[in-house]
Amino acid sequence: METLRDKVVVVTGGGGGIGVELGASFGRRGAKVVLADIVPAPLDAAADRLRAQGIDAVAVVTDVTDFDSLCATRDRAIDAFGGVHVICNNAGIGSGAKGAMWEHDLNDWRWSYDVNVFGIINGIKAFVPMLVAQDEGHVVNTSSGNGGFTPMPQAAIYPATKAAVTTITECLWGQLRLAGSKVSASILYPSSTVGGILNTGIWRPGANRPERFRRENDTEPQGNDTLEGFRAHMRSLGVELKDAPLDEIAEMCVEGVLSDTFWITARSAFQDEQLHSRLESQLAATEPSYLLRNSLDALGKRVGE
Ligand SMILES: NC(=O)c1ccc[n+]([C@@H]2O[C@H](COP(=O)([O-])OP(=O)(O)OC[C@H]3O[C@@H](n4cnc5c(N)ncnc54)[C@H](O)[C@@H]3O)[C@@H](O)[C@H]2O)c1
Image 1 (tube, rainbow, N blue to C red):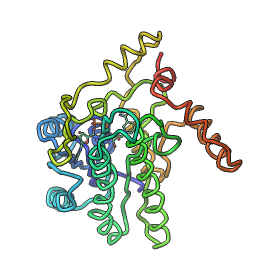
Image 2 (cartoon, protein in one colour):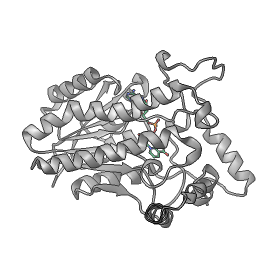
Image 3 (cartoon, helix red, strand yellow):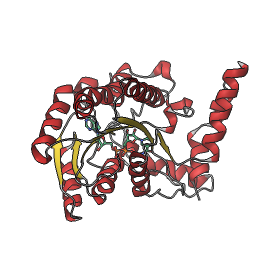
Image 4 (cartoon, rainbow, N blue to C red):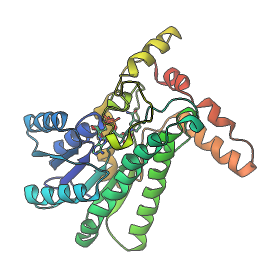
């Protein structure tokens, strides 16, 4: 897409974190913005924030696990602004599962796949037919370096869902090209050029866990802030964690859409090293020991001051 002026952008998970910043960045380029999220109060506050910046924005309560809900959001965007040109399938959760994967509650897997994977599939099915019919548009699917470069093996569920997002988006790109469509697709790996932690709701796992995905025998409160504990832990190792600027990630994404860049990421030496190590391990059929370098402590040391 050459310009975003007067185009319509829908952002799922737009009620906070990276999503609201995406809305603000697209809005600054003249786009009209539909923020879609499952939690109403922060969603309304996010849309107010954008309107206060002079951006045409509406908030639509949406559950990405429900295809009909995403269709209703698409129709609401058409009613409000006359069409849709960019869909950012950005809503995502961390399961907060404890222990090794053979100890996880199955509902941690089910909920994560429902939001992180089916949320993207539903978004593609609700929005891409109209983009293809008008032969104009862009799909951005938010993955994670954890599902694109190398997983953090301690958190199997999240990287597994995000690896699925990576593959789905590669196939989407390929199918659009094979169909001769001008619609394109990108993967966003939220990442910062200046280091730091992405301080978003993802660090409060379980905050919106629906009853149908309740853990069996779970007495632990959901939605606890795990970032403060991580900060304290890293401080005990002599590392002070700062927060990364989320608006930089959103700007990188907008630039990626305008330049039709498939892999939208802030490249780093660590990413390059992990990609090379994984490929070399596959080519030489050696064990995947590069995984052991990818831990939460290692992340903290990498992004800390
Ligand atoms: N924060 C990070 O470190 C990081 C790193 C890599 C990738 N990501 C990805 O970035 C995306 C945005 O996450 P974030 O970090 O801004 O976290 P966030 O929790 O602040 O934002 C995610 C949003 O998704 C919404 N959401 C959850 N379930 C939903 C549903 N069923 N329907 C609609 N909305 C729903 C939440 O209410 C929330 O507002 C996610 O896909 C996440 O996996 C985050």
